[in-house]
Image 1 (cartoon, one colour):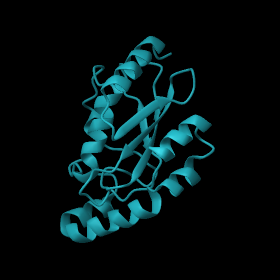
Image 2 (tube, one colour):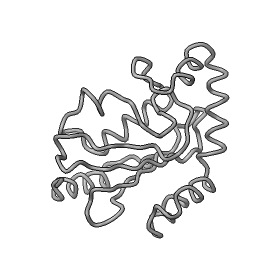
Image 3 (cartoon, one colour):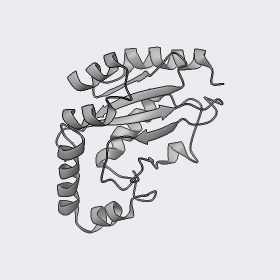
Image 4 (cartoon, one colour):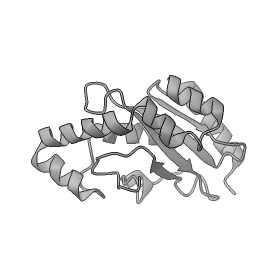
Length: 171
């Protein structure tokens, strides 16, 4: 079982040190299942979007990376149609010192700057490489359609505790 104490320390650190464009909290008292929210970076096609992630910690945490799944539908080279996020820190570069804050900041950074040597959505990767204007247009369409407050409410209403849902929609 993942160390509840380690996860509690991570959460306390996160609450004190996280920037206002990322949010995360455990979904229940076991501290294993978390929900996170990332606000789209300003000045990008993702601006104004609310991107929801599920985080499931391993019983071997912090020695095994948590599983991150993007719940918000996205057109992105590093995010599959099933929400799998493909970046090296989740695979061959995992280190136990990587806490939730640094992981969510890494995800935030790749939102507008995909890592092209580690793609899982090949259509998005091709579009990004061949026609950035078209890519940005498609990303903006997805953001407007899937990453807005009504989409967040519709897709996640039953997954979130009532107080968390209120926080997601009103922040």
